[in-house]
Image 1 (tube, rainbow, N blue to C red):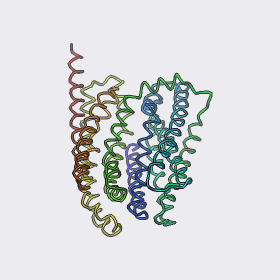
Image 2: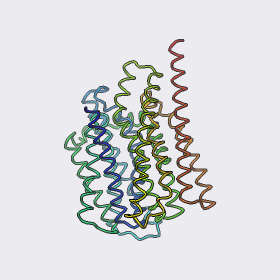
Image 3: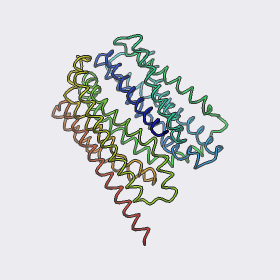
Length: 409
């Protein structure tokens, strides 16, 4: 019953995330919607720089079955404080560089809000990792739902129009509220608990997985970076509306992993074989493929009339919806991350992500030089994700087979 409740709440939260982006796109012109998307993907990218492995180490170190309360508190407080400090430094540096190099003129208030969004988003992500590590999957899903629901209510009540600053400020206020809730629930970090040795240990343990996640983030957003840089914010805004189906694919995959990762780690720790682990991941991936195929086909069918009626400025997005839906299905059904995390094979999974990233870089370089259309960027993205999934499943199978043979030597 608890599992069904978790999936119901998480699906609702992911759906609300999509509704929120549609509500924002309804108010903002494509150019400003593209800039709004740029802030969002920048927050995700900077999160890896401010983590340096800490967040990924949290998944294991903050698990109640793996450490005492005192050890978990020391690791958590040290990691949160160090990560927040780094996020402030990086957010100020990146925002300043963008402001000085951009052709647009931004006021001090806008830049301050952008910096604040980047920092608070990182803090929220850090605290959500703590919740995931503790196996509180329903709380995790509920907070994600609230993160999207509150802005939707405000937008539908105010109808702010093409005002980018309003939407950034709205996100900031909502994130601050969620961070404060998490802090009150689990405790504010105590400076007396800070240990640089603890930080070093966290970085050493989680860095390979953060490197993998960073490369994965670049793979997931390389299409947006390329379009935004070479085709402009208007094209990025149009593409980003269709790319919400890719975001849904990431959310679907995350939903599965948030629930199953702590359980997969415990299962393997309790003596399960590598081949059993691989077969479990394979079955889960097959189920995800079947479910996501149906869901994304329905989304495409519903999106055609929806965009035509409500988003006349985004009509070009209709052409690439089937392609972004296919990308969402591929991402949803690739659950090999569970195998590599359970066996602490971050370096191996990182290699599969690098292969996809290199393929995207080569392809997008060709498209930039030849002047490729939006659908070509989407098609290239799908191809790279299929390649990465194939390599990842192959690597996991080879490792499981080698472990199985080693057990009988």
